[in-house]
Image (cartoon, rainbow, N blue to C red):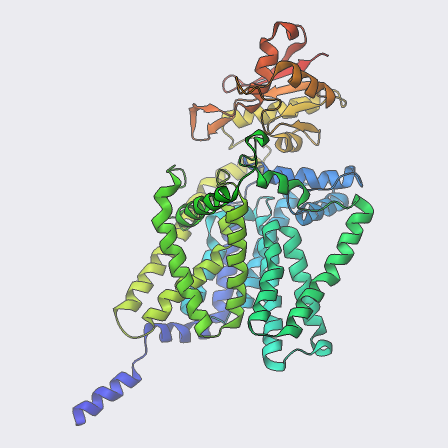
Length: 563
């Protein structure tokens, strides 16, 4: 009996590693918080990028901000959500076009986004889940990359952190006090503002409204449903009235909806997608973003390796199952704040996977969802291993591998970047680009310095040409215009008429690589397929003239058109 009693006491007094970690985190919370902030700042410093990305979307936002100021009120940005370009326009108006300042603002947004995320989630999930997720948020190489770029992601993470923080405040208030309008008015307005801002900053985030309504409807709290909608409309209605008054009723979905319905975003003649096509999109995007990009962002897959989307199918399926198991756990535990952000994140991913063509395949689509998806996945592992045994060792091993991979990936990229950014900040703004990009951007600058202000140059990457061309306007070419179904190139007469109608005076032909790592893999030939039929037509031999060549290899050619 004595032996049995001793064993019973021993079992009762035994603490699992999770319990020990929870106590350790509680004692060291503040130190860890500042350590994570320090890690985020350090990685942002060594990874700082003073150039424009070859992806060109960051330049697109910069150009949009400049146009808001210089073409007001005739210009309104409709390629996607307009809030970030509006903010950049405000900066342009206040300080002028200062690229490094814009990038430092992005670093600040990323840092404050992390702080809000930390404050919102702390003590709402077990520390053994919370700490790995916030380390990912602070140290992931792509999040850090966007921290010094003028893409929307750093801005979005800030607004998402604000929305989580605001939502949790109102959920806590409703849980503790019920719905009370007057005492909770500030909280409801803050929640409504956060929903308005995030829905105007990223088009797919518009699901915040149905997700919030669904959340309160599931608990049959109809007063909260009404106040959710009202608090959003308090900001949305005045905004729409302002847009209608100043910009003649433009909206953020106008420029996107037509393209998103097409089978090919760059070829309207291919027709619109049918139901089967949208289903296939969803499957392909699940495979790409969950089966491939998700694990690339954890450092587990080669980001340059190309495979068929179907090869990622099983991994995507398994990942989704684990995340759904985590969702089941938080529903079972009635963790309302986590249920809320899971509904929002799931709805955002679902919408993105349905409406986006699979050919875009950009990691930032899944990146903004990853912190919440990781919480759900880790929660599933935590739930089934939350007892003494070998399971906790497996889970600790898993998060150790994940975090080691994430941190090493960021450090590796940061230290490779350091000599590049040093050269850039010392004045060599083209250092770090491959020769094809260097020649293309130098030619854009040459156009600004050597051509008249009235000239209009057609460019495959017009926003990048705009930034390096010192604010000179370029004419964008994103797809082959007036395409001949037989040759798949432009009809020369139609293309010439198109250029003349749009007052294009010059055409820039770059040698931009299809594969950035392989100069021999071919070039992006969109503009070539438009211009070659014109150049090869005897009718237009005396209408075009080569005026400049940039570079010794992987050159960029600039032609003048004489009508």
